[in-house]
Image 1: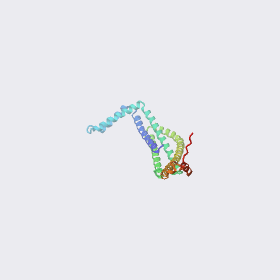
Image 2 (image 1 turned 60 degrees about the vertical axis):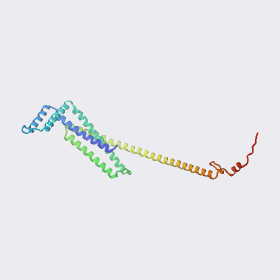
Image 3 (image 1 turned 60 degrees about the horizontal axis):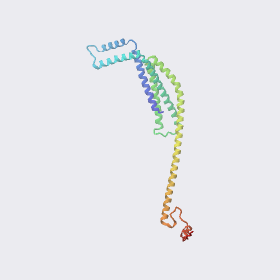
Image 4 (image 1 turned 180 degrees about the vertical axis):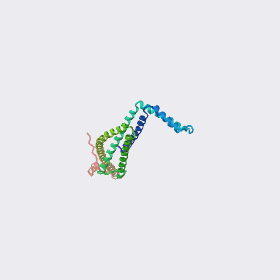
Length: 260
């Protein structure tokens, strides 16, 4: 689990929650008698642009788009689409807290390991610690921003949703922190075991190659010595083991043929 990935997921969830809250608020605001809302928009537009001060083409376009947006929001409200938005907000809020507590668990575990292990990565210990602090602060700021949006800038039901999800995820987060820490320790133990096995096999492989090389060099050297001996002392024979004096005398004696 990479903290940067989890942080990006949490940030994405916060963005979706904020967008969902705005859409939900707009839908709720457009619910009811749409004719009155559209009439109010017409009155405001006429007030801003009397006959002596006509609206520009761009202003007319924006006015028409706003009226269409209100009609679409009203349609969504009447079709019950606000319920889907409400559910999506809850899901994304849960995603934020899920990734938040995963990040916190990883940060805490890394801080514990930093006190007992020698770090050998490219980034310095200080740089990694500063990164954890900054990311934790940013995550906390995201939480504050969510609370502000959902409780003080949205319909009351979203504030209730925020409180409910927050309380539930707080308990789940504590449990998850313990499980994540345990999983990280198990994964580290497996990595260390695998590393030791790789080192062991590497050493044994190097030793085996070394022995093979020594034997090969010895064999080649011995063959060269024997070849040189055969050329210089042919009377000793062409075998790997030179003939003894007794063998040479025996071969020098005349052979007596014994027939049947």
